[in-house]
Image (cartoon, rainbow, N blue to C red; front, side, top):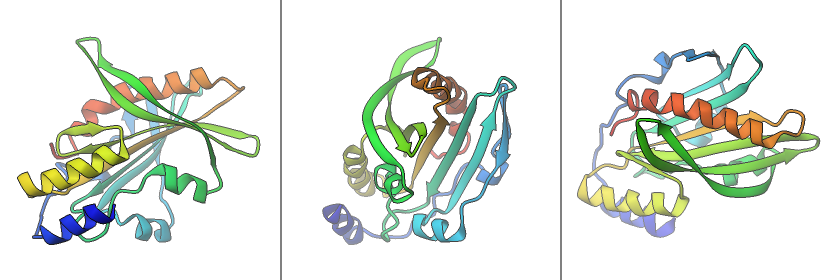
Amino acid sequence: MILTMVCLSYLSHGENIQPKKPFSTFPMKIGEWTGEEQQFDKRIYDILGVDDSALVNYRTPDGRQAQLYVGFYQSQREGDLIHSPKNCMPGAGWNIIETSLEDLTVSKHNPEKIKLIKLVLIKGSQRQIVLYWFQSRGRIIASEYTKLIYLVIDSITKHRTDGSFVRLIAPVLGGDEEKALKDLKDFAKLLMPILQEYIPS
């Protein structure tokens, strides 16, 4: 990370990359999922350093749940690097007990799979499944280290360091982790084309 910041500082110049649409217009209805907009404390937004974001709790009529957070960074040259949940979630009292990669087939018309990062979290008697990825400059990336490598490369070749972080969380109800994971993956499939309308490619 230190090397990345040195490179970005050395190559620094103005950027004016904006979301395709403001995240304040993010849909509250996605398929059968209905959303309720939420807000972090201002202190958290100050720590995150995001330029635009959406935080929405979605539910279905049959009780499935998914919390969506999308954070957009216009530039990462001045120290506002995208934060990883592997650092943030333990600070909120959640213990990471499992980390792995999950394949996601976006649609039946496109058999190509993308990789997402999966976390299993516990806090007391509560358990959550998290799926997250970095969606930056036309790529979906499932590695903190690969993200930093592309950040340096794109700052040189494209003169861009904008980027987005996407996180989904579902509670594990009745101890059924597989169901919580399936719910998140089903929601992620619906979410992918919508994100393309907001995140610059």
